[in-house]
Image (cartoon, rainbow, N blue to C red; front, side):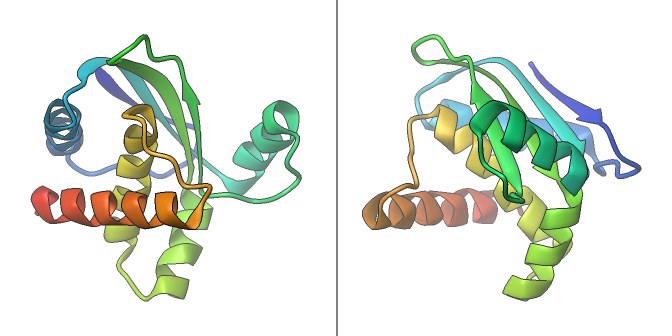
Length: 136
């Protein structure tokens, strides 16, 4: 089950469509959908999590806590709406496209994709692009 939670004024439009898209992505990646919670928050909220849980004193757009069991995906995906807005401007894409990219990025981590090395990051970006096209 995919759920959407809000620690900010932002509310995602058409939660059912996003849920369907994420569920289809999980199936296409040969995984099973468990309980995945999206939490939309502010920079301050996510920064505190980054410091408290990851020892990183930096701003970020997304933090994923993965509780998956094998191929059954479970976790919490925290997204800074502030950071997504700023990144959309920096990357010259719409807010909606950048938000969708960050949302699917978290799920792709649960599916086993990494982004620490250049090669891993390239594969992650190509997967994001692939699933962004499927969303439309």
